[in-house]
Length: 254
Image (cartoon, rainbow, N blue to C red; front, side):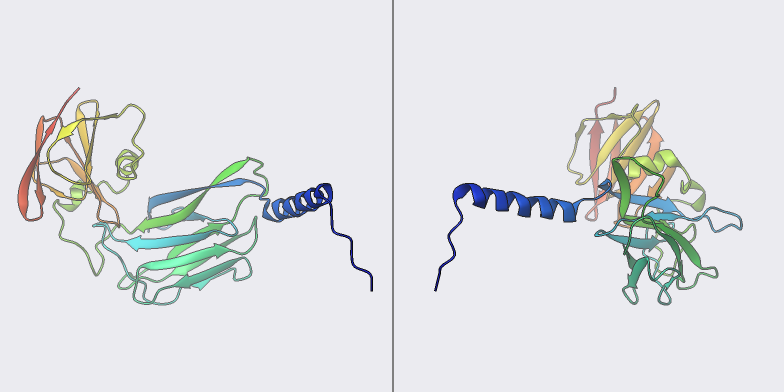
């Protein structure tokens, strides 16, 4: 019985290249995906635009619902997916989290979400790309935090009155997201306050921290992971409450 002749080196290399080309073809995407963690404040007023979740195939997106204090706002029922052929939607019972995964490119749909104690449903528009967009890269929301402009059932104790919460201030949100405006300057600091960054922009300070600020401030904003953003006038020293103690931080102003 004859035995198949072994491949020589050149033939092996050609087969390997063919396999590699096939793998690259299967993995090809029309655009490179740029994952982002984003935050939006939901407008509950009639006629308002819907929050949009940007997704892509082979990428899971997580949506987390919070109130205006940054506390989780739990779902009251399973979310309703209007396009089950285009998107897979799941949720964790008794949590503030749902997950969305696109099943095909260039599709669109929406999800209706009912939150505990909230009289109106939240409608989230979902897209997996626009067919008319020929860009080589596109941003998707790996995690989207949707902030409801009310106090939820698990609302945190607030260090400020409602009037000082900057829910719709894009500048505050940019600092809270860790992507400050270009004209903001990061300041050098001295003091043992962990997870704290300070920027100066004009005559204002913007402090991003996980500790409570003890000084007076003009505006504040919170995220679902426990991070706070404070806006206050220029000062060379600020006090925080950390681990039950007052901790001071010295700032090198410009």
